Length: 143
Image (cartoon, rainbow, N blue to C red):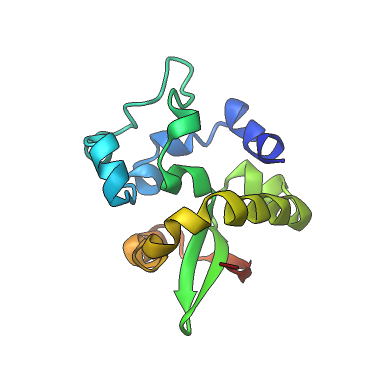
């Protein structure tokens, strides 16, 4: 299912990985900081290949893996959201597609990321509010 959703990135004119307000700086876990020591210091992302596609797609940081979805904290609960970034995945996708993808993320990524969710939810919230101002809540995160 994820390939269907993220396949839109290949021909997208928005180029999220090239937009500083979206891709810089990334949230990195302690292990990711060791693995990707300079990923937060370069813009555009140093891992883009000559077609502007991710050269480390299968090993990219969790922050990249979750995009265009994000996690925000409201009233002591965590929610899946997407920001109004003009991303074709969210503007052309359906809630059913989003849900299938989120279920896959909750099953395969969130268990190892659980200790980082609180910090992640706060990491760029102000910057994203300043840049995009609006987000759509999809549902509560299931741990």
